[in-house]
Image 1 (cartoon, rainbow, N blue to C red):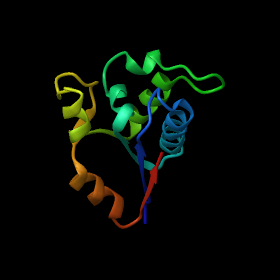
Image 2 (cartoon, rainbow, N blue to C red):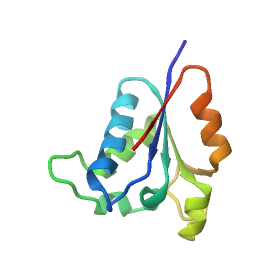
Image 3 (cartoon, rainbow, N blue to C red):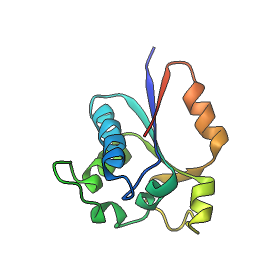
Length: 120
């Protein structure tokens, strides 16, 4: 049975190491052929917008924009519905390939057979 990795990123520039860990794990899993779903919640929500990942900087970490590109090219990226609404982000604002979905979809993905969920 194929495994799916669901990664929820809750941190952004407010906690750069935790943020970078979520993106690094998700991108590494995609590069390894794992089915990956990255969820952007809380302050990581801003990275659904064009140019925001390029502004992120953490010494000794892969550039967030490159990690996000890897994830978008081989996995799924979802922006939390409530998080988007609180930041007035709409579907027309986000990067191509980013969807907006809510808790029911997160739960469905996380409890699916063969799924492993990680929260950062």
